Image 1 (cartoon, helix red, strand yellow):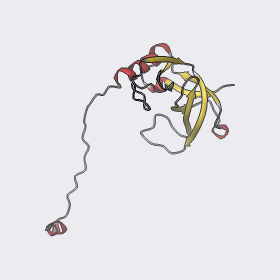
Image 2: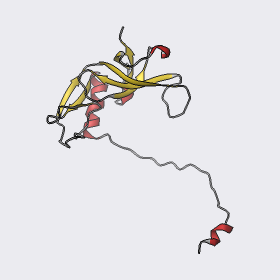
Image 3: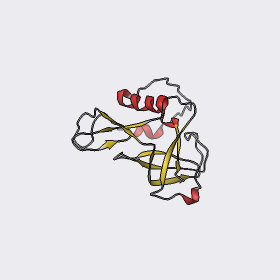
Image 4: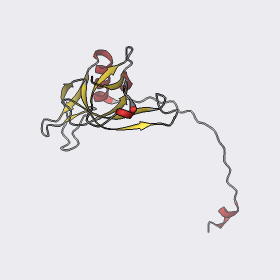
Length: 153
């Protein structure tokens, strides 16, 4: 029935399609990013039933599905849980390699935030390092307003 396809040579037309769009991070994401931009503060949301503090903040608890209306200001310091070092270059990456990023568990949070590590010797990074957030001078309202997390002295 589909034998006619065997004799057809596929036609490939290489091109790029530009599809302009906008998207929203929603009410919860917007508040989180505005706090980063305007006040250099990091907030999570707490589930009153499960006592979990989510970072990045969420609108609903992933365990009990409750609405999370309680905002908790977290410190700028935390613990590096795990990390990876990037050695290859890609246009999708905002910085040039080599660089490291990891999961940081901020003090007061129950979940980790993935972010870049800076001011660190890549050879000396280790889990359980204490780190602190360093903000950009000019912030625009995105997660990269936190420039990186650096080791505490």
